[in-house]
Amino acid sequence: MAQTIRLAILGATGMAGREALLHHEFLSKQDKQYAELACVTASRESEGNTLGSVICRKEKKLAQAYRFWKPMECPKSLESMVIDELSPELIASKADCAISALDADIARDIEPKLAGLGVRVFSNASAFRWEPDVPLLIPEVNHQHIELIEKQKTSGSIVCNPNCTTAGYTPLIHALEENGHAINTIMLVTQQALSGKGDAIADQEYAVTVLGNVRDDWTKDGYNAEEWKSAYEPMKILGRIRSRDEAETENRKILQGSPSKMIPIHSQTTRVATQYGHLECIMIDFRDEVDVENIRKELILYDVHKEVANLPSTPIRLFRILDRMPMPKDDVLIENGMAVVVGDIRQHTPKKISLWTLTHNLRRGATWAGRQGIELYLAKYKGMF
Image 1 (cartoon, rainbow, N blue to C red):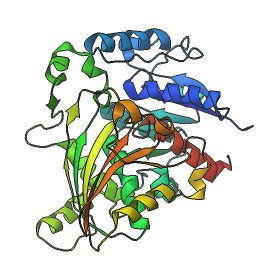
Image 2 (cartoon, rainbow, N blue to C red; image 1 turned 135 degrees about the vertical axis):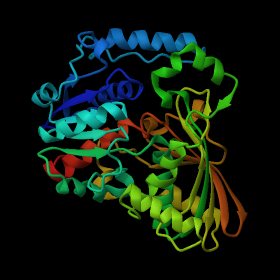
Image 3 (cartoon, helix red, strand yellow; image 1 turned 45 degrees about the vertical axis):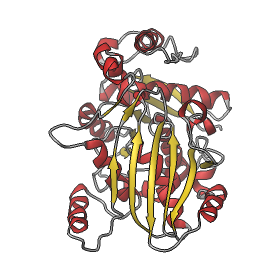
C-alpha cells in the first residue's frame, strides 16, 4: 500500500482508544498498514506523558479491582509516543483522519471544529449519531450511507459508529432481510461486558456492586438511554428513519397499533462481570414461516458487499455460526474480534426463532469498526485498497 494517511486517535488512553492502538499495531503486523499514527490525545492530566506509562497505570488498577482482568500492554512501537493537547488546530495540523474515542460531551465541542478544519472524523461518541447528514455506519450493512458526508458543509466530515449493542445484532437483521425474511418484532436482552463502561469500573465502590452480580448501569429517573439506542439506532442504519424526531413519531405509531416504518425492537440491557464481549439473546418474530436450518445455512454463506469485503479491517466471514451459546471467554476473538458470533439458534413456532449473538464491544462495537469506516471512505473517495 503505497498511499498513506496521517491518523490521530483521540481519547487514546481510554478503553476504546487503547483498542484503537492495538488495531494500529495489528494492521502493521498483518502488512496491511496504510496510516502513520501522527497524533494521540487523552485527558488533560495525561498530556505530556507517554502512552505506555498512562496505559500501564490504568490497566494495573483494573487488574487490582478484578482478579480475572488480563491487562492490555501498550504496543512497544507506540509506548514512548507523547500525548498531545486536545487542540483542534494542533490535531488538524498533524492528521488527515481521526478516530474519536472521546466522551460525548467533549466530542460535541471538538468534532465539528475538526471537521471545519478539514479533518475526516470517525467517531465512537454518540453526540452526532442522529444528525440527518451524519452516517451512522456499519460498513457491512449500509456502506452506501458514507455518501451522506457530501451533504456536510465543511471541508472535513463526521461519520459515527453506532452503540456497541447496536453493532452486535444489526448485521444479523440486515442479513435476514436481505434473504427475504420480513420481521414483525424483535425482543432483545443483553449481557454486556464491564469494558463497555470504560475505566470507571476500576473504582472499588463500583467493583463491589458488580462482582457476583448482574446490574443495570443505565437507568436514571426511569429512563434507560442504552435501551433506547439499542432499539432505534438499527432503524437509522437500515434506512427506515433519519432523525430522532422521526424515531419518536414512528414509536408513537407502534404504541397506537398503527403501521410503522420501524421494526418494533423491545430491549432490556444488563451489565455482567466479564472483560470483553457483549452477549445478546434475541427472539425474532417473522411475518411468514421460516426454517431454522435454512437460516443457519444462509448466515454461514452470507457474503458482504464487494466494496467492503476487500477493506483491511473486514473479517473473512462476517458471521461465525455455533451450535451452542457463544461464550465471551472462548469466542470473543473469533476473526480477531470483528465477527458476529451467532449460536444456539432455536425454532419455537413456525414464525419465531431465538438465538444468541456475541461481539467484541471495543472492536466490532467501537474503534476497530471506526477504522473500517476510514477504510471505506479511503476506498470510495481516494481509490485505495
